[in-house]
Length: 395
Image (spheres, rainbow, N blue to C red):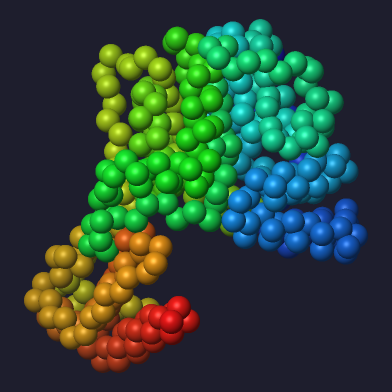
């Protein structure tokens, strides 16, 4: 029976995941101990080989299909897919309320059907089709869902769900900013096209866009939290006249102990809303405390703690506003992939600071008392030596 509130949806989803045999484990130790109970050492070795092949593949399609075919064994499902328990919980509970009575729904990259079967349970009156590139995943999904025949996509679906299905190139860093000192990206159409080709995003989006009905909607959730990937991803959506129907919703979840930072979740429509929402190409607010250099005089630290440390995008603003800043040493370096790195250390009034930034949106600012300035100088020296060693490797 369909659930009416988010709490009810999540409770029902917990039951559904238990039906699949999944467990909500709190520690890596418990998770890997369970794997060792289920798999032989040879099976675990083969699994890790496929994971590494998927991670390092230049053209990941064959490696991804091989990996998901391997993991679609019914005996393997609970011990492998429990690592994604919170992913299913966070994404599934957000997707269900957006069905809004859609008669025809397409779930792209449905895998073995864990969430697809839940959507079908919650909305039994809709026609739900799941598609995936892994034959073994589809075979397992058909054991637990209606066996729907494949059909042409043109104008068939009122709702398309694509979660972790469009940006398969996990190692692609995205588009660098214009320089290390800004978060802005070039609007070069050729650069955007190359990104869409490298990641396979353009072809997939074109096909799904063609599958929407006149008033169709899309729910999209990808590994695009990093600004360098989020901006070209958003531009690809906007170029296909997919309009934001709601502000993008950040989604964070844990893969057992590890915090995973994907998303955000986009709710998109072919027809623009009455009040058009603007695509935002700025970094997400990170909540880091603003820097008051004078206030650092009263800060008391323990051990090797600095007076101030910020690894978020707001570190750039804090660095720009450092009072009485004097650069002692600095280096700026370019990489073949378009990445530009800048590092500097110096004085800010009575304090010492180290600042690092690159054109893939990483920022770091550290401020210490004068007596510990040598530590930052040493750290800066390590950065310079690393740059020099990479240059020698390429020469």
